[in-house]
Image (tube, rainbow over all chains, first blue to last red; front, side):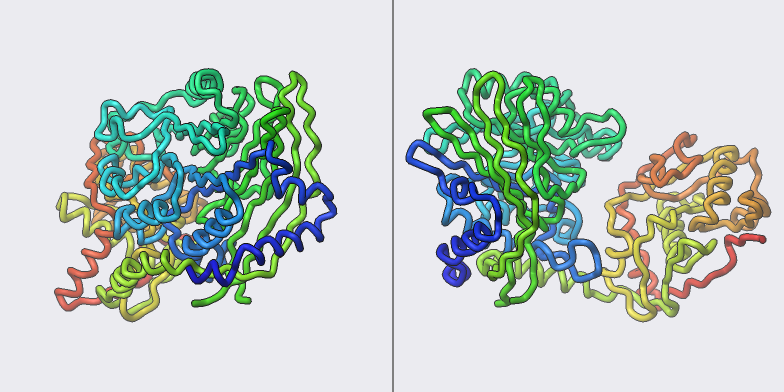
Length: 315
Length: 250
């Protein structure tokens, strides 16, 4: 691919070097590279609420004008995959609706392109239901990655058996368990569009699945893909609430509220430890990145993160 | 291929976790935004994949479906505006194809998202005007509910309405005429709107307990496109004006 030749690994690392030089944080080189053979780095890349934004945002004076675009996201992800061995690419829902690409092609473009970018897993947002369950199924075969919908019971619908509660990835003997929490669509989605689907309480479901991932499957990292939303003034369940009411979730990758975080939020969980909550705005303007560096001997886990803004300033 | 500068807004932080019972967590490091002057180009394989879809989409968006002799403009502060009048007149016509006894129609100022310049109207114009997937609903409402709705319209300084006229003074409705007849609180009326508003969206009052509700499943945008194409076939253009259907009396 010509783009990668023009922006090769060396220049990418050089850029990181410039960054390291600018940063007054002496630890930077240490966490950019896994320290020794005992350390394994797992790189999590994530998007949410891309809303059919195949091309960059139009130059219309809006907040994200000129940002994003899946072809640029692809280049960035390919670069990261060239320099990192263990990359997981995840999406937190609302892939659909927002540009005529969805209205005209019913999700074919979104799902095909996410597959070409080699997404590892996604979850459903409320807008996935905009053309009903039949609409989700129309181009479902274009997705080469699983959808994790742990708190949706689709057993009485045509989607029965087509989504998963969780999936476990193994990278250099590190096990990463990922599950998905979806929003209550009552009031958000026309009832005909989700007929037969049952919504289960996200915290109850999380407290059932996480011990399975941690205990039975011995996952080293547990990630929740969520379309619940970052937080609400009223008591509605949200990522911050799930983080506080559960334990052993390392990271919640959120969506729905289109929240732009320049760094992940640390939440004290039910075990008094930290669960990170991150979200990457919307429309693919931002690509979230969290690196977990695990030392297999000391069990020490370190984390670094970048939230990349995909910008179109012409060089 | 255009080339792009990659800019990372970025911050880096280290948090150290240990698996001891009391984990030591290093505090977050400084959070600054750094620009990196390298280029990020579009992945040509991705662009090549979506180009045919893009071309097909642009062809459709640029397709001319009709003409308007006046610009259809919007205003949040005026009692009526041409984009709103066009929208509700079209909705009433769409609704009357399903139920010829439908009398009035309602939209909201906030729900009409853009303007259309005078001249040719494209599919893309209608997507901008109505980007949402809302579908036409026809509600049979009691006179009481219509009265509630009229008060909502009055206190919000007018909303787009079709099939009726009204005056507003001190945020109160008066001289309300429905299909040329004075409003009668003891009668029932059929109103064409869309599902989002029928469900109480945009804080509209009076719609959520109809005597009867028909959800037509017709996406408003598709209905508008069909409506304009039908006018064009009949050799007509859109000539919506400000006709004083909502008047605020100072």
